[in-house]
Image 1 (cartoon, helix red, strand yellow):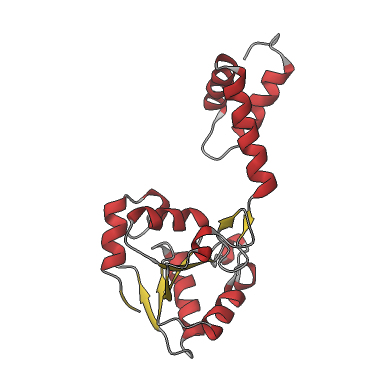
Image 2: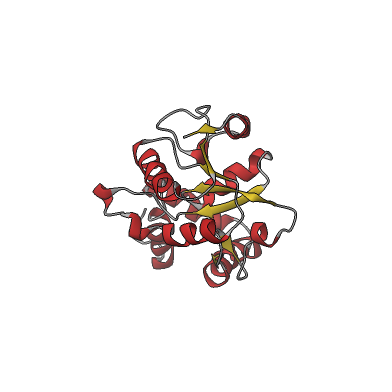
Length: 200
């Protein structure tokens, strides 16, 4: 960056560089790209960001992202109401949905148990999950936490809590490499993992 460049550009670069995975050079490229595109295109990005911050919240039932009280999945009467898939984050739910295989309901934990990061069970949506299983008509609960140490520990903790209920508890099959993240798995791997899920 040059010393005489506009303060607005410098500020934009600083804000972009705060995004995950965006370093200083990438932030500069993005900033100059936004200067080159039409005003309408740049402002549509700004409006999309504003719209997300002002209108997107967590679903009151499953904690997926929603623009109303309930997300699209919870509002859909055609979903299979006896299956519940537990994921860590909304982006994991999106990845599983893209596989096109699973047609049940979801519950988003909004994290995983990670004591070294200060994340305990109280930081997650485990209490609402237990209430859903207690009052719902679920036959199967699928643990779809990430296949790593924290994800496996979270799944084990939750499965112990759910053991008092008459539900079958399954885990995604290990078509997904241990230590990987659901967000980066392709559709085929996710479809195999869902179809090949097994008992805990």
